[in-house]
Image (cartoon, rainbow, N blue to C red; front, top):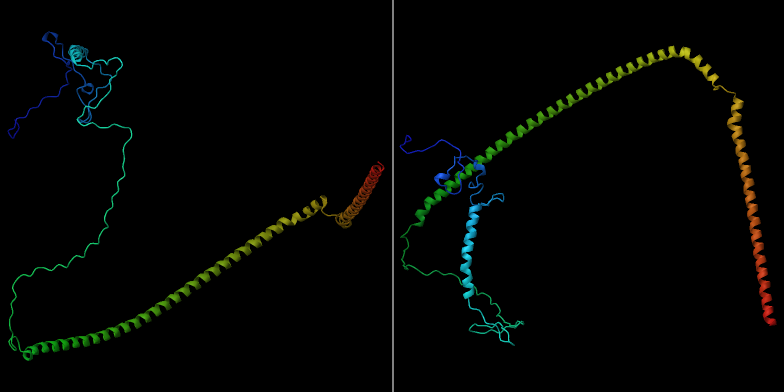
Length: 336
């Protein structure tokens, strides 16, 4: 029993027993063995709505198979008498044959051709919908009337006095308010004008101070740049002086050695010999080449002239021979 008075039962967990499918007699009972529920075919996994399909590896029970075969054998003799007792159509007489006929109450002509007819129908034109009439509600209630004589409701001269006093008072009050508002607006405009003048003066002063600060900054930067340029030039001058002194000290012994080496390699030469090699010999070679080119041109020209003359002479000879042959043929024809 729990503290609330309800009955509660619980047992210790234990493995599932591996029991056979059919009941056994007490003499055939064997010691209990335990199996794994993961491989039990009675335990269905997945959705409970799906159909449980026994896998192919499961072997059918021999006793169940034998029982099904015996059931089929017992049912077979029962079906055979029914088939034998069913009446059948006798065989057709010689020269005739059985055909299918209609046994319905109303006969129907059977044909491969389907009869089809064309039918036409003309509909009326659509008419315009008439205008919807105005809705006039029905009259309800009763009509009554009354007569009001002059002076019964109110006296205009007396009743209008309070209205006029109210209108004049309100108009005067509104006029005074508008005048005070205009005076206040004039004061505000004067204050705004004075404030704008003061602000413009302050802005001009701020701009003047900014311009002065800018000029001071530019002057400072320019002075710094000038000083850097002066230091740079002084450094360059010092480096040049040091380089000049070093070069003088180095070249004091190098100049005689250089002249000696140049003289040994032939850089110091005779001017007349150099002039002949660089000016006279090139000019002489150019003139010789020009002379040879003119001679070669004249020779080619003479060869072309001789070739043209020979060709012309050959052509004239061929023409003369052709004329002589033609004349002889004509003479031969005349003699015949």
